[in-house]
Length: 532
Image 1: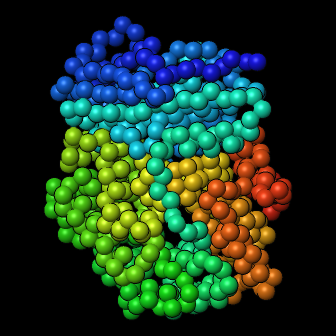
Image 2: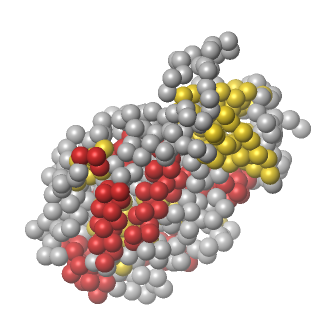
């Protein structure tokens, strides 16, 4: 039997600290990098605690090295920082400079070994592997600079030796369960309609209520009410393709009132859900509460570490919840603060310099959940799963799907199911919507929706009004019925998870399913844009 497991629940073999004054080559042997900061470690119950004491330094990161023999590893799989794209959550040969966010698995042909940090940490974790060991970088930055704090538990490191003959998907799912001590999960299955992928923001109250009536009639015999989700386009300041932020105090002229809309959705036998973008506004904001976003060029981005911003965000969430919306999907927080790539485009510091970027994000999520109420369902989109876990019950795990090209749905929605090991371990995962429009395959979208239902994930469909025939309506009803019936302790196993980046094999209740996601284009589509 191969021996490729490296036990990292011990003192690391090398420790380096990066501060705001560290030289570019601080990682290299012999380079002077005088720091006052210290790192200390605790080992207890199979957990390595990494503690940082800045001692007056503004610390950007802590770098740990664990030597060991990984030369027998065949393939490595990492996670994504927030939602995943085609380059994340992919099995690949060991690439020493490729960062693996949050956790990673190794496959040596016999066993699956697991390494990661626990959810809800105070830093953003990136792993690196090479044949001679494992490196862990804990990003403790505040904005683009360092964090000034007294004491910081950067992260809690765990690992798990695999066993030959054990299903690798189940092994990974169990490890995800170990990473999150207390997931916050919905009491009931979450499924229904989201109008984005057919309307793309061009919506009004009449159309929403027509959809809700259709959905309510379709699911009238099911034991759990569906959600009618109103996505982007209801807010007063909405210019398609240019601005989609707040204020969130009222709707545009296409809706009489959002409270009335919620009440009428409820009258159809549906629960009301709604989308919003909490950090972007054109309202007045005191200058010290404005975040100098390098990504967002229209409107004002709120600095979530400032007291004014916190109260404004909480007030908006409380208002929307008070209108009667039981599910609130909040979006764009990572983009507004960090640009296209987390920790990529940032001002030097946040208003509160004593908190890390990870802490500021986690406190923002907690603020939103608390303002909505602990019984409210919050769906994080463009949010960091490892920081949302234990706070929000729902999390978008992949980037956008599409009502314009199924290839886009395959690359982002179906591919994101490589992260389905997190489902029910961190939260209920949302692989995004199956879209039913005149431009995409109805058959393949039904199969995507069914795969999500079998795994026990959130199940949302964007259905162009009037597009489904009777057989399609029955198929949709049956998939929603499956979504309502999956028990908390069950869910489909992805049978080809170890060998693919786009899951196509599922085992559920004694039956095997295999989907050909490539039949629409006879392979992967070569020319592709988001618009077509």
